[in-house]
Length: 429
Image (tube, rainbow, N blue to C red; front, top):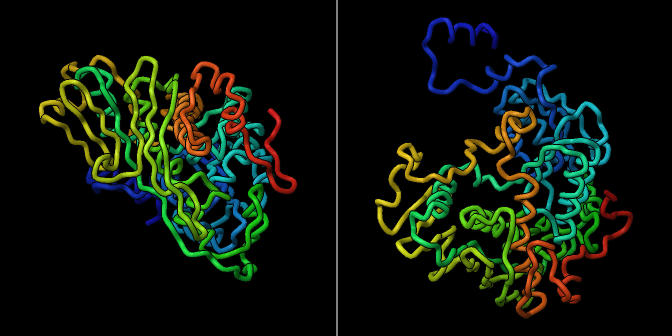
């Protein structure tokens, strides 16, 4: 049977499977009513996000962009499996994709050093943007993307998917509603950095444009390991390290449960250790503390016996700890009524059941993006402040209203983006 008759049979008989394949549902939305999506970056994260988007009947992936031909071919095979053909346009230059008038929205999932320029360019071309975390390599870059979103009025969704996970929302509601008593501290633990040998220079394969892969970052010789997320997220040419790439996830939840989505800390203090040799040179271990004017302090460290992985909200009357797939509390009674059906928690946070679905609903005017640009920049500020503190090697005082370090010129210089290589520069908003 073809797709349409197959779905009609399911509906007519009333005997439906537990799971209806997305390919059947997808065929029921007219092409003219579908949101068209271009994907910039089809590595591991990009294809993972793209698969999530493929589950929605009202969306069609119509364009792919990457400088690695092998990754393009892999993405095309995924589209062929989903759609029956891989007829999406292929670009090697994100600027051409962003200027394609047939594209409504863009998924940006490039390495971190590439995050701000393509996203700002997409927004300035009127595209809605699903922007993988973190915001970029500097506070200035995050603020520039925000300025573009504010100017164009498009929908922005940050790739902090934990906001669409019931357990993280539940923990944040428990913290905000006083079910733990007054919050005394929030502990955030994430994986630390890694070490690696010094990767030797290798010949650049014909399947990758290595100069374009490096883009605005300082030049470095090619080695295939550098193209792997596990490594390039721990190399300072391309990333701030796990303090940002992993840190943003749980620091975002700390902000949510602390009730500080529209504000931020007033100071940061701490220290860190770096690898002494090898290609991976991003911070390996750290412990920092954010103080707030009228909210609980946040202790942020690489995970270990003292501060474990996840976000732990500690109150006067108990604690709740949440990580992916798990929520625990000092007393099981704290975890009663997770859906708040009996009104035990008057403060209700926005509910999102799936991150890509929420993004599409926001484009269609049915919902607000659960991690919009304003929230994203505020959350992303924390790992940026952490990185700045480690570079300055001293306590820094932050003004969350002005979003700067006040009269501290040395610290304010750390907000700026680093010099960019070649033709690359931040777009003008």
